[in-house]
Image (cartoon, rainbow, N blue to C red; front, side):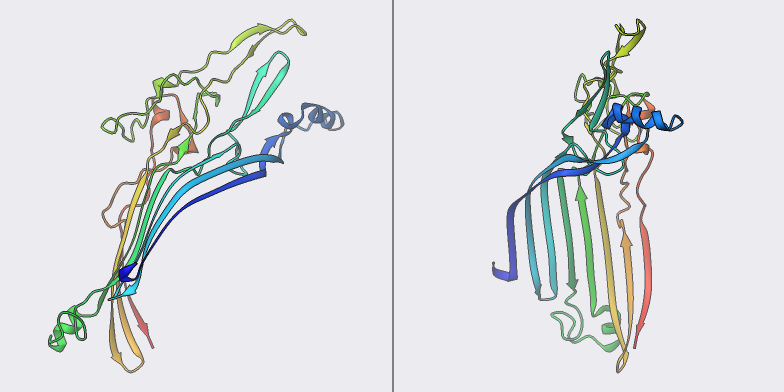
Length: 304
């Protein structure tokens, strides 16, 4: 395009098969655990890795890039995406549902939002050599002192704005509760003290039955219908701004001054709930962590 601009619009998708994931031996095969414990009575249930999980990713990706001209360069990108999987990572697996029945444990794989599923993400990075000073559009007739102080500056920035990641809601026994409504609060009521409506996630009441083999009462169906990764955590926006100027001291020797402002506007970016999941209680609906506040860095760099 004119002005050394480049625009790109595309669909990007991927599908992962036979992915790795953690399970416990009893979930993988109760018979195998019984066989192992027969030879090693002191050995408790333990974890292992297995294949067979899947992932799905679909996205609309757009970008605009201006090649360097007239002292200006920038790259802006936007992604609208959705990631689904029955295994998000190699450490925990909230999408492998373990429930109980009179016949034993029931293991179910659930396709749900991936841990890394953010729907919207915008990023911008740019450099602008300000047109002031000798040889520039403005200030060509400045005296040497004014030119040293005000001429030859360069500004740069990195801006990232994205939506929140999804998180699972558990009851206090780390079981899935029931979900009776969306749980999303209006923006005016949403805060770190209550991020979502936890009353939408009542603890599931299991059924007590008599085991026909043992004649003893036991609870079955301890998991509710709430899916994994059902609530969105807080989004984030971060503005990193900087300015720099080079002073030529003598032939082959330069002094550079840099001023860098990380999270320049001191925006409060709330982070994930502690433990990386919510609970269906008042305290469990809170967010108690936040990213770093504004950080200012000034530097001098001598190059020779």
